[in-house]
Image 1 (cartoon, rainbow, N blue to C red):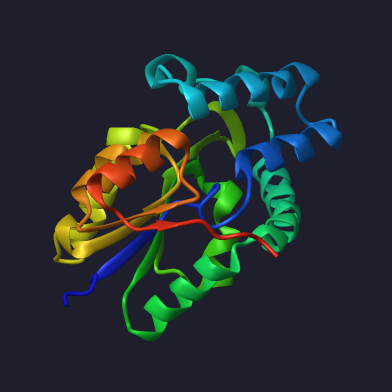
Image 2: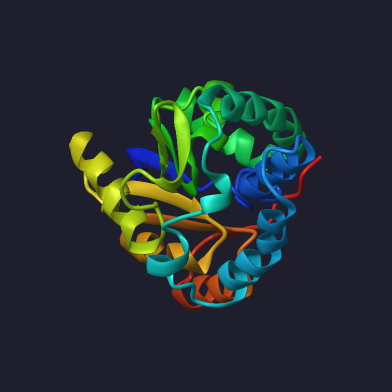
Length: 219
């Protein structure tokens, strides 16, 4: 039986329980770095992401309330948040990542989350790379926007395909683990798609396509 030549993992709700972005923004609010108004938007964005089809073009381009924060502060909060994330890592997924590494299969994280929020995962898992949305900095301060296109949906597929090409392989030779229907373009293109704690829409699709489904639990 053929085995994947590279494995890509979403992070939020796939490697960890919950959302890295929500943890970060909650921590930033507690430190009085972002206003309460921005925190209030989280349920709206989560509902759109989880149950609807968000208009990425409009609401992922600019977050004015997140502008003007220096890089060192963002990195500091990110590091503090990782201490929380570590406690919610799914042991079963951690074991799968470890197995890939021991077999010499490169492991990458492919997430819609912001790069600086999830970079600590790179060291923790000794991953080979990170595909993510990139926070834009101007003069070492956040602009409130992204650098390039955020890694959602078809854009994530594009970025992962580019990485596979750099490795000299095709997506049909790659595994991809995700919880979200928004990763459908990548799930349907990867040769080894795995649904992890899938939302209702992805679970329905996974059952129709006979994809493996994993429903791990955190410690």
